[in-house]
Image (cartoon, rainbow over all chains, first blue to last red; front, top):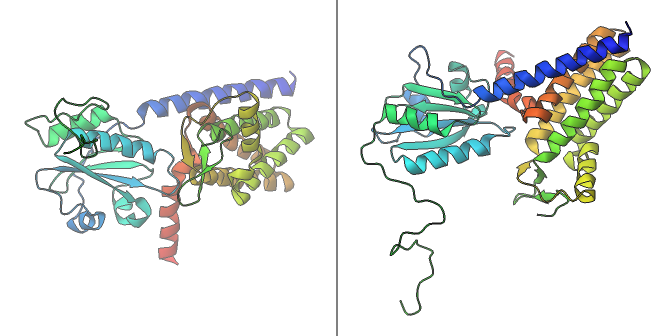
Length: 173
Length: 158
């Protein structure tokens, strides 16, 4: 058989396999995984990450980023959106290259990687890629059950009688 | 932001249309896929061309990327509209550097007569560009954390 034809079929099959693998990876991206063994961050690591002073009743998200991370902005948007609806959740971003001890201890391979840390430093969940908002909320609620749900205001709708700080004020007031 | 796709952020760093790298990756896939099929002198020439495209993007920046410039021309010619989103240049440029590295391995392998190794390396670059073109996954960008770990470990040992 003509070698070019053989290679054409081979390359086409290879391309198909790569695309399918990519779809599978995309489907798994951002899923929250619960660590198997008891993994935790030491107080020193928490301090260097800047989360040692979080309130005892909150769960903290540490987003490990890198300089060439193309999806980190999207990950930060998700975290901001979840934090707006969950007062007991706080998060901060940290460059992975500044925290190689954490990266090595927890086997972090990608950026963005989100580490969900309980008040006692225990690693509750982790995800790589852009985290999924619904799974994140579920994990937060399972760790620090919230009582009253304070709804984040919907964008573009204003509650009558309530003005934001930058809303125009009537003349004379 | 102009419809030509060239904009700069507050620090003067280039911002690119997010569709640009995917367009470039699609072209790269066609070039390298064709090279893998036909091989021979034509195939080698295609790989060499792709190496040049990677090198220009890596060294001079994405503003001078051949495929990037073609994309901006296509946008103007077919009036594709402004970018749906922009991203900083650094991650895609790092990915171009990764493509340059692996295609350099391919060319060296060809020069040394190890054609099979060379085509395997071309296959690797093809896989990476296919992933970027079809799913938006930038494997080169992802490797940065891994690379930092490896380099720092090597430094510690030295």
